[in-house]
Length: 254
View 1 (cartoon, rainbow, N blue to C red):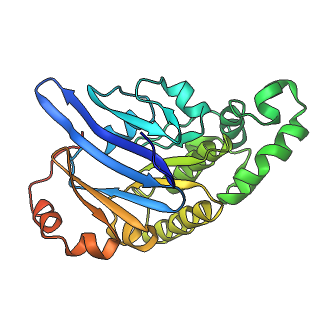
View 2 (spheres, rainbow, N blue to C red):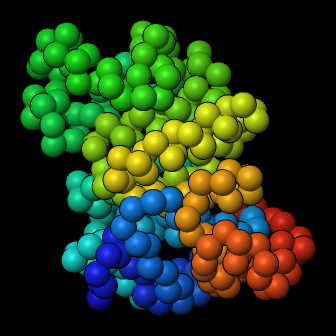
């Protein structure tokens, strides 16, 4: 089911919610490395696709391969252990824990030192392993702050640090710049590019087209659950089907 150079392969993936078809026989190949955008009007199925790939939901039809492994029916915890991490459109952080403890909790599920011993290690040792992730997202100086006291942009960077703490090979980002200011969005664009520069493959759902077109090598477009375009940013922008899709009425995302 896999092909050389492909990290993630979806073949005929279908998902229904009652009579509503959220994903309609989607075929999509994500090549290894780089940043891959996933866009489309609200309600097109973007978040549903990320939920299926990450094991939050199960498809009714089709299959999914990650490298040489069939993950179609795999539970979320197994998919995470295979090296797939994600962030959420609605933040999934521990708001009453410190920034440090948020990343520590995520890191304890990885295969590193914390994965074996977790909270049994002295705080100094845990700090040494977690500090690089906090430094990467610009939160090292706020390590002891309570997560809910951070502004939204910083909370999104914290969630990104949590995703990276498991040392993934593939990261799924669901609107990583949602609610951010233009300056914060530019910072997030730099972080996404830096992550890709470390050899981590990224699939990013995002409505901010400047961000998508600025950092993505390829962009796939969903509309009413169907894949209507997949190509370079320039090709997608010029595609008449994409232009038509974005002229439609927008609802809530599936």
